[in-house]
Length: 191
Ligand SMILES: [Fe+2]
Image 1 (tube, protein in one colour):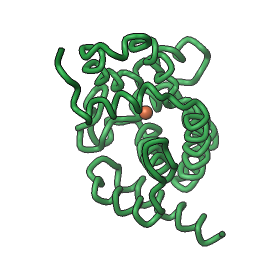
Image 2 (tube, helix red, strand yellow):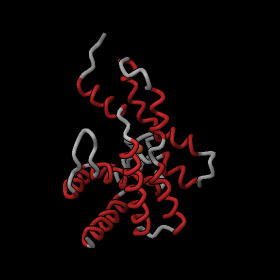
Image 3 (spheres, helix red, strand yellow):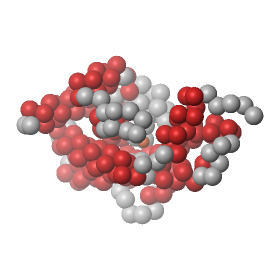
């Protein structure tokens, strides 16, 4: 049987060690930031509120993902299939689409891993093809994830997070990113 590389097994551990409390804290952080950022961008109140909801629910598809790998953790083929982690945005959308959420909430969740340069998933949308709610969530998601401690690494400090994000600026809508910087700087100035 082929041995897993350490990188593969590390990745699988991360997914299999699904930490509900960390996921919830992440959802709350994304929700709060997405609300503040959409206000800064001047979105209508209803959309700001919708983005607070989408922020809480954006990764809910990860719960579905677990059933794909449950009990098969030692099977290298299944571990290889962990690339299906990329399915979580579509799975989340599928889970929520008949539950009364607005199209704005649903498409924000479906496309929250699309990159501005077209390199994201699930549909390789680029630029303004990506719904504004998803472009906002993309920035908030990355910022909150890097700012939060995880079981496999410490939290990055805010300055490092900003540097890491600027290195990957191709992923983000610049107008959204500049507004995001204003929100973060204003919140730090208020501390
Ligand atoms: Fe996600």
